[in-house]
Image (cartoon, rainbow, N blue to C red):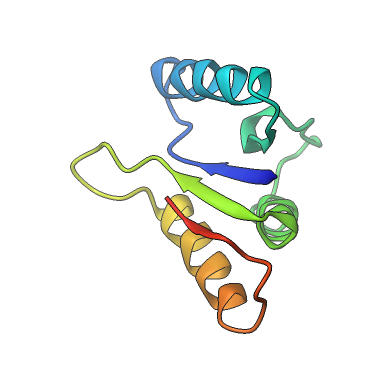
Amino acid sequence: MRIYFAGPLFTPYERDFIDQCAAKMRAAGMEVFVPHEIPLPDPVTPAFIFKIDSEQVLKADAVLALLDGPMVDDGTASEIGIFWAAMQTDSTKKGIV
């Protein structure tokens, strides 16, 4: 199963927590895409981030979204929306957790 791990990536704590969770999931045999693990070009552009993230969301079987803050991260909300739209026409998409 290929899982897109969506969540805020703006602090070392957020990235470390996602890394720890992804490591456990990988140890259990899951294929996990974590956005902050990809190499970034210089300069990084919003268009690059959207292109890579949306491509990976659409390749996923499921999305795991970390929603533990006072507000949902904008990028996470976007990734949830892209996957939800794909679920409407693709029965192989398992769901959003």
